[in-house]
Each structure stands twice: as C-alpha cells, then as structure tokens.
Length: 266
Length: 153
Image 1 (spheres, rainbow over the protein chains, first blue to last red):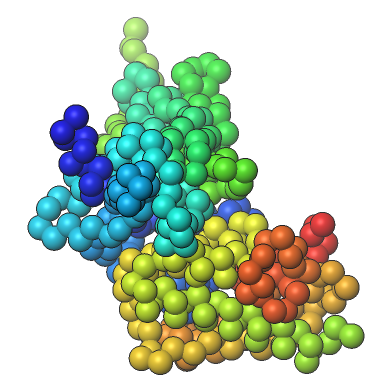
Image 2 (tube, rainbow over the protein chains, first blue to last red; image 1 turned 180 degrees about the horizontal axis):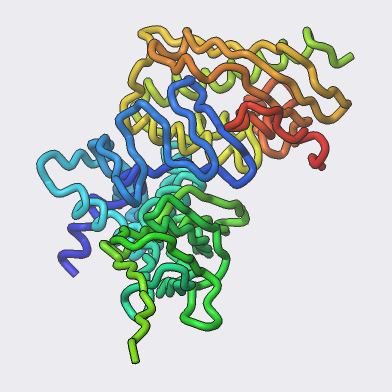
C-alpha cells in the first residue's frame, strides 16, 4: 500500500511518445506532408523524414521527450482528494521504467479519484492517449517457416506465417475504457527480388496455404514477412482508425535447391 | 461564389489555425488540449490522425528547424479542380518558409480537399473558415488523386 501511495504521488500519464512511430497514413491516402514541409509519409511506405525520428518496428525513434506525464493526488482544504497531472522529468532514470510506472498509475490509481476542477484544461486529449497507447502496445510478430525447411526450384513453396491477424486490446483510462482492435496484413519479401502481398490471410502449409512462391534459382535467401497493422479504437464516445505500425519476422538464409534427374544405365 | 480567390482566403485561414497550434505546442514544450482542438477543427478523418501524429513527433523532437518567430505556411491554389457548395478540390502550392528553415524542396505541388465544417467539431470556434480539410497530400506517382468530393458525404 505504501508503494501504491508513493507511486500515485507521481504518476502517470501519458505520454507515450516513447516509440515514435512511422506514419499513420491510411490506405489510399497517398502521401501526406506535415504542416511544416519537413516530413512526407506515404501509405505503404516507411517514413521519408528528416527529423531524426525513425519508424517503429524495425527501428525506434531516437528522440524522446525528457518527461513522462504522471497523475498526482491533491488534497483539498475540505479533505477531499482529486487528480491532477504533471510532467515528470526522468533524468538519468530508465524512461521505460518510469513510463511503465506511469501507465500503472493511470490504470490503477487514477480511476479512483475525480479530476481536479480545471484540470481538464491541462490534461491530455483522449485522442493523444489513444495514439500513445497505439504506439506502445506489443503487437504480435509473425514467425514464418516453410516446410520442410528448404525449397526446390520450380516447385511451389508454402509459407506459414505463424502469426496473428487480429488482436483486441483494452485499457482503463482517465476517460473511460479504451478498446482497440488491431488487424494485420502480411507482405512477403522473398529475398530473390520479388515481394508479394498484402495478404489478408494467415499463410498455411501445403496444399491449402495461400502465401506461396516459386523460386527460379538455387541459392540462399533472406525472407522477410512484414505485418502492417491498423486499428479501430473506441474511447469515451469517440472512435477512429490508426495505422502505420508494423512488425516483422523472417527466415534467414533459406536454402533453395535444384533436383536433377539421374538416368541410370542398363 | 467559390472561386480561386475565395479558396485562397479559406486556405489562409486554415493555415493560420495550424500555425497557431504549432506555435502553442512549441511554446509550451508539450501538447496541450487547445493545440489539439485546433488541429481537430481543421482536419477530419484519416488525415487528422496523420497530422496529430506529426505534431506529436515534432513536439518530441523539439520542433527542429522552426524559425525563431514562426509564422504560417502559405497555401496557394494553382488550379481549382472542382468547386461545389459543400466540397472543394484544388491543386495547390505551399510555401513553408515561415514555419521551417529546412523544409523539403521536393514536395512540389499538392492537393487539398475541403468540405464544409461540422461546427460540432469546433465548439471553441477556432476555425473561422467554415471549411475543414479532408484530403491533404499527393500521390506517390504525382498523378492527380481521386477527387475526394466524389465520395465526401
């Protein structure tokens, strides 16, 4: 309990900027510049920006805010208590640790108190909270394989994605319950110069799998399966869609062989 | 009458709202509800999510390249592609010199789709134009995007 009180004295909020994500460009939106003409992100692309921030998934943003927003408890003259937020500069502390503590307090402690009068004007917009959560959630990663562990030139190879195409997330927030449904689409870089997808299905084994490829040349190929995620969200009567995150899995050095017919003499 | 001059005035108003938001966030050092409400007042749909994401990342990065006294970007119509009473689609050029000292020079012509503003989205009346942005960008191959007014409700 003491820990709880201590934590709640600092905690919480938002922030979530700990993983600057790639663009949230919805399909068919083309390329969207930011309001200052420094960043252009295109649907289906990773970022083409010059801010020093990089896409999440393969890479994580290198520039982070130096604070985490925490909830705090204020005791009023009449003895009642209410919640306000403040920015905690984490200095030399682990940002991940501080952010995790903040998340815990927003979820567990903050809902027990009303917001202080006027606090809403200094708090965080629900949409910012949604975006922050979206950037933080651990999305499933594909773990692809191709049986029996190699392929033969000219023969169809069946890629099994071993992933998850939909995942529901929920979280308590100061604004009420937040619900996200994340949906993924697979794209496969077969390592031989060909990329296929997006696929709205899990890749399965022969003979019914729908993610297939036929290699022409023998060799060793690095196969990369990228899952591009979008999510619908609902929070406090508002809803929307976020996109732009991706996870990936791969098969390194995948062997492709050739079978040669041997004609035996009599 | 919705003509080029009128749309230019609307775009100037929208650019000013966005400029206010950027200046507020840059000054505060963090996002504020008022700054977000301004973005929500001028963008709608998927483009809103994108612009909020940009603002979050720009704030996290400390607004690199922001001039000491930032102004507004300037959007100018180069061709009015369609003009209806509730929806406008235009090809535009943008001058970012007042908001960034290192804007990309390869963006070139862009396209903007506008539809009439739902005042319920702007209860603080931050958006004086009566219009909101439903499309803002360009196609990767530089072709003309589908007319957003063809599908706007």
